[in-house]
Length: 107
Image (cartoon, rainbow, N blue to C red; front, side, top):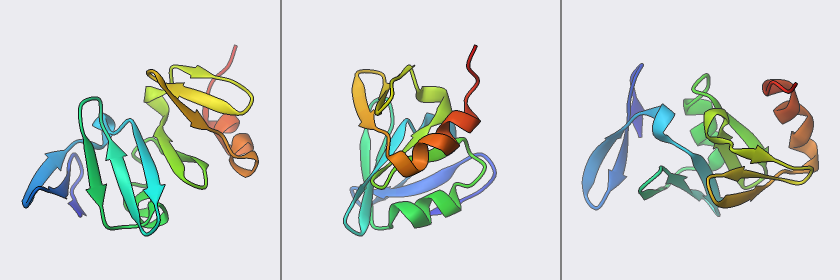
């Protein structure tokens, strides 16, 4: 995966597909790979969640669980132990909750 200021390219079905980091809704780890979820597709990349997050630093993504990172702008609801991105429930790990709460604005 390579990136520039506005886009990144993900290998998908033998092609390099251009994505905007803002289009990423969440990333889910799966062993040494990860699934990047957008509103309409899911891309499998052969990189760890930790490495993906380091490459996407400053793009609005935050780790919320050992297996999940979310786009802060995609969060639709938040509870004590989980959050919602659309209709998808994503767990919040105890060690990541404080950082998440520091990054969002509550009234």
